[in-house]
Image 1 (tube, rainbow, N blue to C red):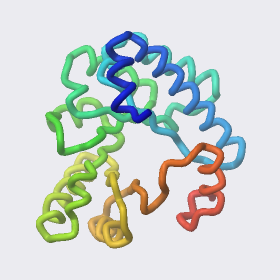
Image 2 (image 1 turned 90 degrees about the vertical axis):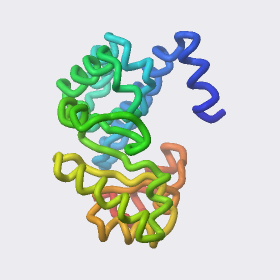
Image 3 (image 1 turned 60 degrees about the vertical axis):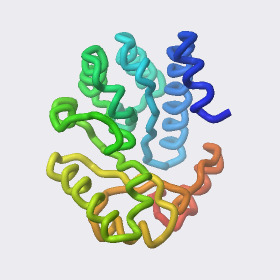
Image 4 (image 1 turned 180 degrees about the vertical axis):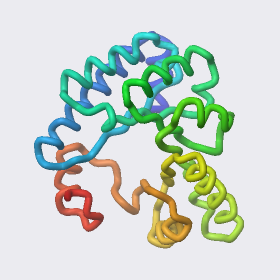
Length: 208
């Protein structure tokens, strides 16, 4: 069942809090397992807008980080632009950032965030939405992506391109000095055990 089917149901029935705790627990457990296997990689967890209204979220996340002995810097929380608008959400994100957890703005360019939010909340990453990356085949598409990357770098924020599906797009992003990329060209979604093998054997050189 895809997330767009079960996440709204979880939000409506108050199941989003235990579901988020479970996801955070599993993600941090896997991060610890990778660390013990000699793979120094972090994890990212998507948060619902409802999560950001939960004042207990920072304490819960800190508890799980301590349980699995994971450095807060190894955890990123991804959120959409519209979810950070309410004042309680900004307070929750400020507490998460104070713990040392990375904040990543997902689907950048499609929502309502302001430059003030980017600076105030000390985002670690912005993720350029795949709709812009898919349009990079022409000069018009590149002219949209280039200033997004420049903006991120000017603010001291790492820039990630979403939805990279071919070598040409990856080469174009390299030429624009984009920091990271994600998409099916690099690796399709796979179970953690398979991903461990992929990281150990991948030509991308993640296992160092």
